[in-house]
Image 1 (tube, rainbow, N blue to C red):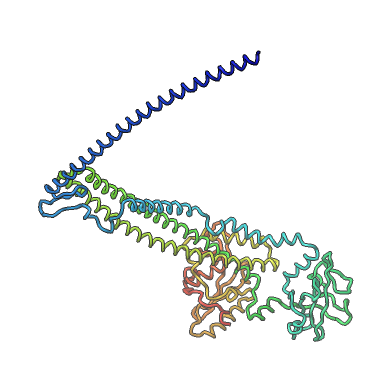
Image 2 (image 1 turned 30 degrees about the horizontal axis):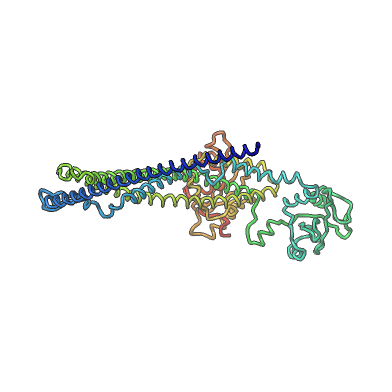
Length: 584
């Protein structure tokens, strides 16, 4: 029973829902029909409005065409190109015809190019200002001097780290009797003709050992020297030991070698000179350690003056840079002004084109015409100014390139001198010249070069001596030897005998030098001192009691090679023209 009731209720609900759906569908269809009707009416209304607009546009175009035809008949003018009939001439005037063909280009492209060019100039100015802040290639003075000090102390620091055996071996390099890697087959040739007891030492064929070479009774004798790990040295199979080879040599100069070998009843005497051997082998002159020292100071003062010249060139170049920067700014401003003038011309032309009613006003047209001509004249003047500025900038660029070339040459010269100076310092250190003494001389020479006038520094840099320092600085010559050498040179050059000179140590004035030179057939002698006065103007090398001193002996010779000595002595109106040993 209950199931039947449920079914009846379900059927009634289904019938009600079906009726409801049908009614909704009917209402929906009615709404769609109404909407379609409204849409159709709207479309018809839009089409009618569109048709009306098209007719109006067509009518307006016909009216405009008729007006243009009437204007052509009245004035002979065409809209978009205004003309002005001059009162004096029966011809049309067009401001466009006044523009130079070279200056007339498309506004958009031209303005873009001008602005890019102006920006490029501004970027170049900014880059140049940055380049002026770049540090010079040469290091600062304090760095350069500290670098030299480091080089001077490097050998001492390395020596402290070496083993006792290495220290004993290193001590040999300061000795003139040490010949290094001379092969055994060359020994008889080197020592041939030497008296008994004359000796030298070379490396042994056994690495780490050495050989004493000397003549005894006209025969070559060889003795091997052994260096132990503790640094002590001795002859092979001999019990007597020494702290180093130098002390071994000194011992057997006063004690016979017979104590080592009964067949050698001889004392060691003078040694053969390695420097002299190399000089004879290479056909060069032997340089005394004092000559090397003066040569090193001469090279150092020259390198310091190069630094001063580089500073001067940098200052001069910066001035040229500033002038070039001003020219670039002027050029940039001229380009900017041209942009403004061209924009003004285009605006005036556009105003006439956009307002054709002004064409009939002769005053307006005449004013615009004059204004356009004036702007074109200004543009032409700007173009001429730009051409002149560009030409001047090219000349400045050539000057800057010349400065760069000069600086490059100075850098090359500086580093060549630096290499030569450091090589001489190593030689001096190997000859047991104290690094503190070399260091002191370098600091003094640097201070004197810094103080001297720029004009004098420039003079020394441009002077090149035609002779070497060993040709005029002779350490082992006394007054009589100097007279002999100069007289021999005078005899070789009877027609050109004045100005022959040499410099030697003074034996009458300790610590001074003497300049010996030929003057009018006679040989004169003048004292040359190194003054260490508290007044820096009176410091350096110069004639005794004079007012002119120089940082190095080489500078002293350079100056009087080009300048007369009459300011020192009126009887010495002559220059240092030729050395006594120059043609020996």
